[in-house]
Length: 122
Length: 108
Image (cartoon, rainbow over all chains, first blue to last red; front, side):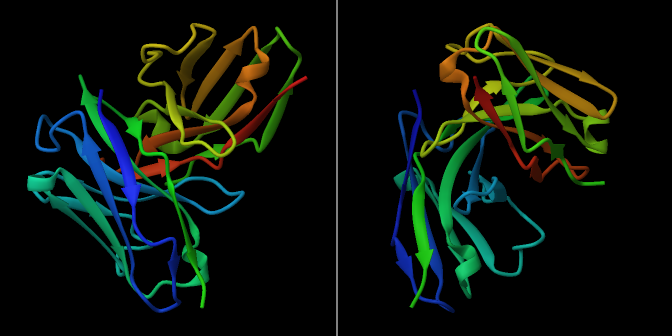
Protein backbone atom coordinates (compact mmCIF):
# COMPACT_ATOMS: atom_id res chain seq x y z
CA UNK A 1 0.00 0.00 0.00
CA UNK A 2 1.38 3.37 -1.00
CA UNK A 3 2.21 5.87 1.74
CA UNK A 4 3.00 9.55 1.42
CA UNK A 5 4.90 11.68 3.93
CA UNK A 6 5.42 15.43 3.82
CA UNK A 7 8.55 17.03 5.21
CA UNK A 8 9.99 20.51 5.41
CA UNK A 9 10.34 23.59 7.60
CA UNK A 10 7.41 24.33 9.84
CA UNK A 11 8.22 28.04 9.97
CA UNK A 12 8.94 30.30 7.02
CA UNK A 13 9.65 34.02 7.10
CA UNK A 14 7.49 36.35 5.02
CA UNK A 15 8.80 36.93 1.48
CA UNK A 16 10.85 33.73 1.61
CA UNK A 17 10.16 30.50 -0.27
CA UNK A 18 8.02 27.81 1.30
CA UNK A 19 9.44 24.43 0.35
CA UNK A 20 8.07 20.97 1.08
CA UNK A 21 8.91 17.47 -0.06
CA UNK A 22 6.63 14.46 -0.28
CA UNK A 23 8.29 11.05 -0.01
CA UNK A 24 6.40 8.16 -1.54
CA UNK A 25 6.88 4.65 -0.18
CA UNK A 26 5.31 1.33 -1.01
CA UNK A 27 5.22 2.02 -4.75
CA UNK A 28 7.26 3.67 -7.45
CA UNK A 29 6.37 7.27 -8.27
CA UNK A 30 7.07 6.39 -11.90
CA UNK A 31 4.62 3.49 -12.08
CA UNK A 32 1.33 3.86 -13.85
CA UNK A 33 -0.49 6.98 -14.86
CA UNK A 34 -0.68 8.69 -11.49
CA UNK A 35 -0.46 12.39 -10.84
CA UNK A 36 1.11 13.66 -7.63
CA UNK A 37 -0.68 16.59 -6.04
CA UNK A 38 -0.34 19.25 -3.39
CA UNK A 39 -3.40 20.47 -1.46
CA UNK A 40 -3.46 22.93 1.43
CA UNK A 41 -5.87 23.85 4.20
CA UNK A 42 -5.69 27.01 6.32
CA UNK A 43 -6.79 26.51 9.90
CA UNK A 44 -10.56 26.21 10.14
CA UNK A 45 -11.02 26.49 6.38
CA UNK A 46 -11.54 24.23 3.40
CA UNK A 47 -9.23 22.43 1.02
CA UNK A 48 -7.44 24.27 -1.78
CA UNK A 49 -5.79 22.45 -4.66
CA UNK A 50 -2.31 23.84 -5.39
CA UNK A 51 -1.08 21.78 -8.32
CA UNK A 52 0.14 18.43 -9.58
CA UNK A 53 2.94 16.69 -11.42
CA UNK A 54 3.32 13.54 -13.48
CA UNK A 55 6.51 11.50 -13.25
CA UNK A 56 7.34 12.70 -16.75
CA UNK A 57 7.52 16.22 -15.35
CA UNK A 58 4.27 17.53 -16.76
CA UNK A 59 2.66 20.00 -14.35
CA UNK A 60 -0.61 21.84 -13.77
CA UNK A 61 -1.12 24.64 -11.26
CA UNK A 62 -3.99 26.50 -9.61
CA UNK A 63 -4.30 29.70 -11.58
CA UNK A 64 -4.50 31.75 -8.39
CA UNK A 65 -1.05 30.52 -7.32
CA UNK A 66 0.58 29.84 -10.67
CA UNK A 67 2.90 32.84 -10.59
CA UNK A 68 4.46 31.68 -7.31
CA UNK A 69 4.30 27.89 -7.36
CA UNK A 70 6.59 25.23 -8.76
CA UNK A 71 6.28 21.47 -8.37
CA UNK A 72 9.13 19.14 -9.28
CA UNK A 73 9.71 15.39 -9.21
CA UNK A 74 12.76 13.33 -8.23
CA UNK A 75 12.08 9.84 -9.49
CA UNK A 76 15.40 8.47 -8.25
CA UNK A 77 14.40 9.25 -4.66
CA UNK A 78 10.69 8.64 -5.16
CA UNK A 79 9.84 12.19 -4.11
CA UNK A 80 8.10 15.26 -5.39
CA UNK A 81 8.42 18.77 -4.07
CA UNK A 82 6.57 22.07 -3.75
CA UNK A 83 8.11 25.53 -3.85
CA UNK A 84 5.93 28.56 -3.14
CA UNK A 85 7.78 31.84 -3.48
CA UNK A 86 7.13 35.19 -1.80
CA UNK A 87 5.30 33.56 1.11
CA UNK A 88 2.88 35.64 3.17
CA UNK A 89 0.78 34.95 6.24
CA UNK A 90 -2.03 33.91 3.90
CA UNK A 91 0.06 30.87 2.96
CA UNK A 92 -0.04 29.58 6.53
CA UNK A 93 -1.78 26.22 6.29
CA UNK A 94 -1.52 22.47 6.59
CA UNK A 95 -0.04 21.21 3.34
CA UNK A 96 -0.98 17.76 2.09
CA UNK A 97 0.49 15.69 -0.68
CA UNK A 98 -1.86 13.27 -2.40
CA UNK A 99 -1.83 10.69 -5.16
CA UNK A 100 -4.33 11.11 -7.97
CA UNK A 101 -5.43 7.87 -9.53
CA UNK A 102 -7.09 7.40 -12.90
CA UNK A 103 -9.35 4.38 -13.06
CA UNK A 104 -11.50 3.72 -16.11
CA UNK A 105 -12.01 7.42 -16.77
CA UNK A 106 -12.59 8.24 -13.12
CA UNK A 107 -10.17 10.40 -11.19
CA UNK A 108 -9.71 10.79 -7.46
CA UNK A 109 -7.17 11.26 -4.68
CA UNK A 110 -6.80 7.78 -3.26
CA UNK A 111 -3.87 8.32 -0.90
CA UNK A 112 -2.95 11.33 1.23
CA UNK A 113 -0.03 12.26 3.42
CA UNK A 114 -0.69 13.11 7.05
CA UNK A 115 -0.16 16.81 6.41
CA UNK A 116 2.54 19.32 7.35
CA UNK A 117 1.78 22.57 9.13
CA UNK A 118 3.65 25.54 7.72
CA UNK A 119 3.46 28.88 9.49
CA UNK A 120 4.59 32.01 7.70
CA UNK A 121 5.74 34.48 10.32
CA UNK A 122 8.74 36.62 11.20
CA UNK B 1 -18.91 28.49 -13.38
CA UNK B 2 -15.82 26.85 -11.86
CA UNK B 3 -17.12 26.55 -8.33
CA UNK B 4 -18.55 23.81 -6.15
CA UNK B 5 -21.04 24.88 -3.50
CA UNK B 6 -21.84 22.95 -0.33
CA UNK B 7 -24.00 23.76 2.65
CA UNK B 8 -21.72 24.66 5.57
CA UNK B 9 -23.34 22.34 8.09
CA UNK B 10 -25.99 19.70 8.53
CA UNK B 11 -27.10 17.63 11.48
CA UNK B 12 -28.59 14.17 11.70
CA UNK B 13 -30.00 12.06 14.50
CA UNK B 14 -28.11 8.88 15.30
CA UNK B 15 -29.27 6.11 12.97
CA UNK B 16 -31.08 8.43 10.60
CA UNK B 17 -30.26 9.41 7.03
CA UNK B 18 -28.50 12.58 5.91
CA UNK B 19 -27.83 13.87 2.41
CA UNK B 20 -24.92 16.21 1.72
CA UNK B 21 -25.15 18.13 -1.53
CA UNK B 22 -22.62 19.70 -3.85
CA UNK B 23 -23.67 22.00 -6.67
CA UNK B 24 -21.72 23.19 -9.68
CA UNK B 25 -22.07 23.43 -13.44
CA UNK B 26 -19.01 21.22 -13.89
CA UNK B 27 -20.93 18.36 -12.30
CA UNK B 28 -22.94 18.08 -15.50
CA UNK B 29 -19.69 16.81 -17.08
CA UNK B 30 -17.81 15.10 -14.26
CA UNK B 31 -18.78 12.93 -11.32
CA UNK B 32 -18.07 14.40 -7.90
CA UNK B 33 -15.60 12.75 -5.58
CA UNK B 34 -16.26 12.79 -1.86
CA UNK B 35 -13.80 12.96 1.02
CA UNK B 36 -14.29 12.64 4.77
CA UNK B 37 -12.05 14.58 7.11
CA UNK B 38 -11.93 14.01 10.83
CA UNK B 39 -10.54 16.80 13.04
CA UNK B 40 -6.77 16.99 12.81
CA UNK B 41 -6.56 14.27 10.18
CA UNK B 42 -6.00 14.04 6.46
CA UNK B 43 -9.00 13.59 4.18
CA UNK B 44 -9.91 10.09 3.11
CA UNK B 45 -11.73 9.05 -0.05
CA UNK B 46 -15.26 7.78 0.61
CA UNK B 47 -17.05 7.82 -2.74
CA UNK B 48 -15.99 8.33 -6.36
CA UNK B 49 -17.55 7.91 -9.77
CA UNK B 50 -21.23 7.18 -10.05
CA UNK B 51 -21.32 5.45 -6.63
CA UNK B 52 -18.12 3.56 -5.88
CA UNK B 53 -16.63 3.12 -2.44
CA UNK B 54 -12.98 2.25 -1.86
CA UNK B 55 -12.27 -0.87 0.18
CA UNK B 56 -13.02 -0.35 3.85
CA UNK B 57 -15.66 2.35 3.42
CA UNK B 58 -19.00 1.22 4.92
CA UNK B 59 -21.90 0.70 2.56
CA UNK B 60 -23.97 3.26 4.47
CA UNK B 61 -22.12 5.83 2.34
CA UNK B 62 -23.50 6.25 -1.16
CA UNK B 63 -23.23 8.75 -3.98
CA UNK B 64 -25.65 10.03 -6.58
CA UNK B 65 -25.90 12.78 -9.13
CA UNK B 66 -28.55 14.70 -11.02
CA UNK B 67 -27.88 17.62 -13.31
CA UNK B 68 -25.57 20.07 -11.60
CA UNK B 69 -25.92 18.52 -8.17
CA UNK B 70 -24.07 15.61 -6.60
CA UNK B 71 -25.05 14.07 -3.29
CA UNK B 72 -23.41 11.97 -0.63
CA UNK B 73 -25.92 10.08 1.50
CA UNK B 74 -25.21 8.48 4.84
CA UNK B 75 -27.91 5.94 5.59
CA UNK B 76 -28.05 5.10 9.28
CA UNK B 77 -25.54 7.69 10.46
CA UNK B 78 -23.17 6.61 13.21
CA UNK B 79 -21.37 8.72 15.80
CA UNK B 80 -18.09 8.08 14.02
CA UNK B 81 -19.48 9.70 10.85
CA UNK B 82 -19.30 13.12 12.50
CA UNK B 83 -16.76 14.91 10.32
CA UNK B 84 -16.27 17.42 7.55
CA UNK B 85 -17.14 16.22 4.06
CA UNK B 86 -15.73 17.74 0.89
CA UNK B 87 -16.79 17.26 -2.69
CA UNK B 88 -14.29 17.62 -5.49
CA UNK B 89 -14.24 17.58 -9.26
CA UNK B 90 -11.97 18.30 -12.16
CA UNK B 91 -12.60 21.64 -13.79
CA UNK B 92 -13.42 22.38 -17.43
CA UNK B 93 -9.80 21.98 -18.48
CA UNK B 94 -9.74 18.44 -17.12
CA UNK B 95 -6.33 19.09 -15.59
CA UNK B 96 -7.18 21.17 -12.55
CA UNK B 97 -9.11 20.31 -9.42
CA UNK B 98 -11.89 22.07 -7.55
CA UNK B 99 -13.05 21.53 -3.98
CA UNK B 100 -16.32 22.48 -2.40
CA UNK B 101 -16.23 24.51 0.79
CA UNK B 102 -17.03 21.50 2.92
CA UNK B 103 -20.01 20.41 5.00
CA UNK B 104 -19.72 19.76 8.71
CA UNK B 105 -21.91 16.81 9.70
CA UNK B 106 -23.03 16.63 13.31
CA UNK B 107 -24.56 13.40 14.59
CA UNK B 108 -27.01 14.13 17.39
